[in-house]
Length: 221
Image (cartoon, rainbow, N blue to C red; front, side, top):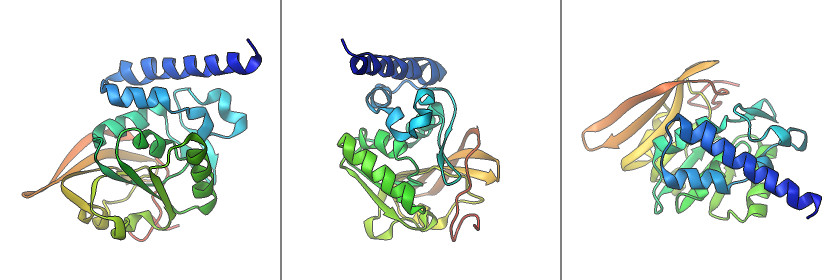
């Protein structure tokens, strides 16, 4: 057995350990979500010099002042979004493409918006290499959503917002969920908003820390 085979076994073991100890042990029990984290190779979404840290319990830099989120946070937000196999999901902040990759295993279509062209290009290349072709990426202001593809069954925002962008709520179907960190720079409250005939229900899911959501209805650059 050669070095490549050994390396593959090691990364698979690291991924299994990540799922068991960082995600399932903290209360994420949805089997579909756990299987998605077992399938998607997180080390493919980080820089070469950080691959040995890919399955550790913290965020990692992906350049341009952005990060790939801590595995547990990605899982927690995914569980809060509750994606179904037939869902169309909008992601704000493509970043490395890892969250989009996880979602691509759980729903029909993922639409992802990234404001930094170099990150969008890198994420597209990685997703294509892995065969995750049900993800569409465009460059733009995520706070405005993607009106031409709306409405969505769920929207996930992977950056901290000073307030909830109205455009995102307006692009959800009835019963649609918006998962978004809201608060000050450096510390936010992870919230889930569910749209119904009676209005919008807000739930708090706990504290978190994300980079700033830059845009017309977010933080100014």
